Image 1 (cartoon, helix red, strand yellow):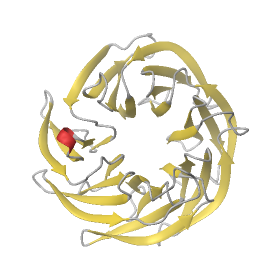
Image 2 (cartoon, one colour):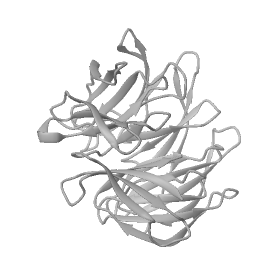
Image 3 (spheres, one colour):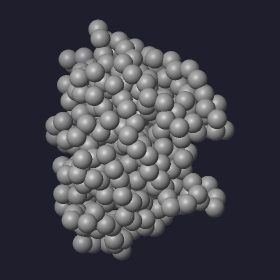
Image 4 (cartoon, one colour):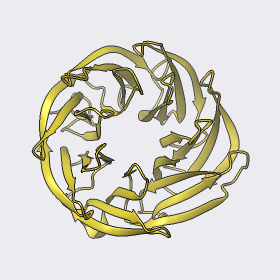
Length: 342
């Protein structure tokens, strides 16, 4: 039995973060439980032991971050830090678990939060971004991703509004910019994933439906673009917006979701990590595939659809990377974050 945690918006029937227990051979989940009742936990992250959970929250119009700790029976609130006027969209935890990092799309900022020894949260730094891009959705900076690059001293961010990938380091609890990489105007970089062993990250752009291959210097944090690939073979007829990107643990295959087109794109990576070959585009079996993730053993994918609530499974061939849709179908309202629990 496999387990996934699911974050969601809560302006509909959903009321928080749920646990979904799955047998991939069945067409319905074995068990669905609400783990945490929380307002708009649209993105969350877990500590290495999976006992601490940090989630975006928006109770009583006081957006911020909540820290929950597993007691052995349930998750209990440790602390809640309200520090924003508008909700953030992304949260991650540093490798040493001393810092929580947030990206705020609406407030155009990158946020550093210190996790104290007792689990309490302390606001350490806010970087207010400036700039814009040519697309109507780029009227201002829109920070959409902020996470440590593997176990290096560098933290990478995506600014969808200014078409930049950014490299930071932390000095005395403050964020210091190391490098900034401009990608083609109007791309809208949204999320990225790191190759498990090679010095590359793969940046998914929401507005151009492209994946940028970026080399990261492990010593300096310098960023260099080395390739650009389309998730779709041609421009879509109507609306489309790429959303989530995942990589297999062997570094051989890359997966992306396309909202509007409602498809999943599969890329094969070259052995040197520098080139992508698009090998499959498959219907996601629902409306608006906002997020998805690989199962713990990577034998299948769980895809969540924001607009119609369908949770779908796809078998994954570990040798070819190709996906095959399964009969599994369960509905849970407005799921937008999928985390696999090992």
